[in-house]
Length: 237
Image (tube, rainbow, N blue to C red; front, side, top):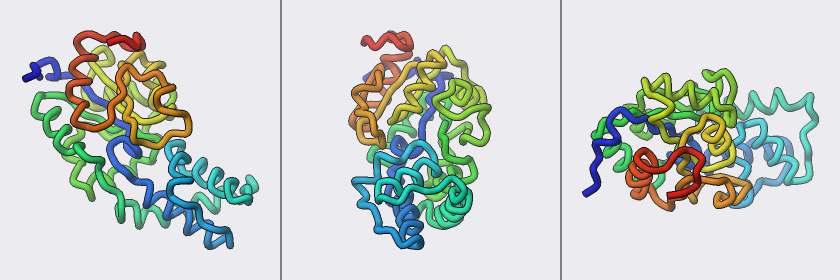
């Protein structure tokens, strides 16, 4: 059995959408409500899935553009407000943790790790999802984009999340699925684990993870390896 003592006091910072939870059905469902209200055909889930991860405005812009109806700049504030209102009421209808998440978080927490959520999603939308899925008690801090000086890929978002959890940069790992997570980890000098099942327009294998995992049952070992033997940004194991 692996020696888990190295995890004591270390901090794992997690992205939310596409990393901890599969939220695509609720996010794309809300986008499709907007499209329908505007007389635009809905997008298939698989086609719109890669648009997730850069915030609601990006999702709206890409969704409407993909259907041949680019959004004029002056219309975006109203569409954004309608998106947030609908999504806030339906953010956990179909959203679920990815397989193995609860078991992994349980192991990390029992080993004494500090856990943080570092997401560009607003904190006020993130916490209800975590609460609805009974994930909130695992986390020492939840830092949405609104609580950070700048959002991912800026380093300050990740460093803020680690500090809020009571951790240190030199004893931390970023776990994500897409370019904003990779950018924040590299900018902060924090080792990076990426999941292969998230939401990304750039192939995840091209994002330069220190370790790429296919299932959460691989994450504990990945964190152990990075914390003991793999300097951030080395790309070597």
